[in-house]
Image: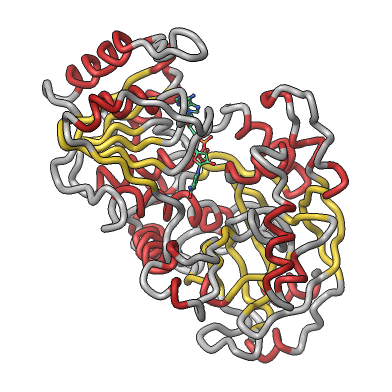
Length: 444
Ligand code: NDP
């Protein structure tokens, strides 16, 4: 990999890259198939990704014609790496085995180890024989929508494809590594004013929030809409706040500390609810919810929102909040959800839902067009990378634990091949135009 890094640093030509040997093995973060029972009987909270995530050399897989090898400069921690590393709700080896049964190329993925990671900023080092639009040396970011585009079900909205998978979660050879294998149609141009680590953190979370709020497949937020955002300084929540502000809406952000409330104010989100300070108890016990607590929450929202209920709720905590979200959204409003961090068996009072003609939209990552649109907004400097802290690949377990324990704000970057932070900016003038303080808003 050292030769590849030197070629990147020297700005090698496409031909020079093509002449470089692809190493037979590379450094990667992975979980092991024979360790999936290691946390049996352990409480979810105490399952420690530092024990299950290993950093070591793995064999380089063969390249399919529609794929490229990328040298990963930086990656990020997503919650899906937490799920994989605590083997919840299921070990991800089941996904890899399913791929293994699909076709010859799929067989490569069913291995005794799973290389994780779904975000990357990178340089293309080799392109398969069927790749047309990308060449070695191209500086890219990657979206994680892994779809067989020859399947007709993928043609309209590729997220509706029957074989749709998330790269590095439901496939092997993910991004928390020095090298990765991706389909060419996952590649997008790297925003030219961003460093490697800034460019690496956006793909998964920003695209997800874009589909949930902006896209015709999501809540289709309009100018003037008010949007309640759970976890508003978290990975997807922090992008959601930016999309609402960009689109002429009013975000009402929910967080769990005064420091996070302050960060929201700095982002331009004035209406903030500190859920811990308010001490909402939506569940009075394990099986029963307390409608009076939903009402107290709804009253607080109205106080912050000119006396009105919100048009949209950006929902992802799941079981702990869904009842309150469905109750609090306005008559005719929309709850859009993509996750269930606190539990997926959600419950809400259907009377409040149907009598008030509310809608619930299920959303998952983003199709090619949505990922591209989200990437373009980053490139234009209209959406900022949420990077708050950068780790080395060796400390991936530590970084995953911080996300697992809700100790991190925004996104955690991970340096893979990039030797240090601050490298990779291609257009310093553009960065100056957008403003260093704007681009680095979440770190200041
Ligand atoms: P983060 O950990 O970065 O942020 C989540 C935020 O949610 C936290 O900061 C916390 O904010 C808030 N939160 C956590 N638990 C609760 C709770 N019980 N009640 C209220 N708020 C809570 O995670 P991400 O934003 O990256 O991801 C959030 C979820 O979305 C994860 O489950 C992830 O797997 C999923 N996801 C799904 C995607 C998809 O395509 N379907 C894509 C991306 C993520 P605070 O404590 O400040 O309130």
